[in-house]
Amino acid sequence: KLNWTGNNLGVRELFYSYHPPASFLLTKAVMVLGFEPTKSIQIVAFFASIGAVLLFRSVLKKTGILSTARGVMLLYIGAAIPLQLFLQTAITIEVLVLFFTSLVLWLSVHLWWEPKGKPWSARSCVRAFILSIVLAVALFTKFPAALLFAIPPAVAYLSPNRKHWQYV
Image (cartoon, rainbow, N blue to C red; front, side, top):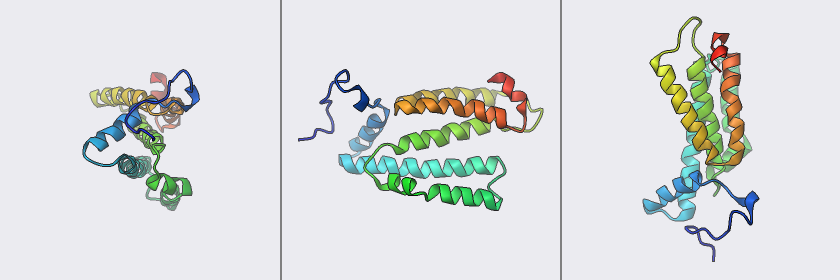
C-alpha cells in the first residue's frame, strides 16, 4: 500500500527520484484542512496555476505589452497551452515550478523595470530580499528551479533603464 504521509525510500538509494520537501509540505498543509491527499494536490496545483497566469498578466501589464494585440495573444496562448491545462487538473506538484517562475519574473520586473533615473528605494531593497527568499523556496520545490537564478539578471539587462545592470 502506498503511504502518502510517510517516507518509504532512502534518499541515498534513489537520488534521482528525490524531490526537495517544499511542495510536499504545502500539500500536507492543505491535507491538514481535511482534504484527501489527491484532492489536496489538485487544490495546490489549481491555485498555483491560477497564480502563475495572474502573475504573468501583471508582468505583461508592467512592461506595457498587455495592451497590445501581441501581449493579449501571448497571455492567452500561454495560459491555454496543453501543458498548462494538464497541470491545472493533474495530480502533480510540477505546477509549483511554473508558479515560482512567474513569481520570480514578476518580482524581477517590479525590481528593475523602472523609469530612467529612478534610484533604488527601501521598497526596492525589500523586493530584492523577497526575491532571494522566493528563489530559495523554489530550490526546495524542485532542483531544476536553479535555472530561475538566470531570470533576475536577464530582466535587469533587458530593462529600459540599463543603469540597474550595475547592481546585478
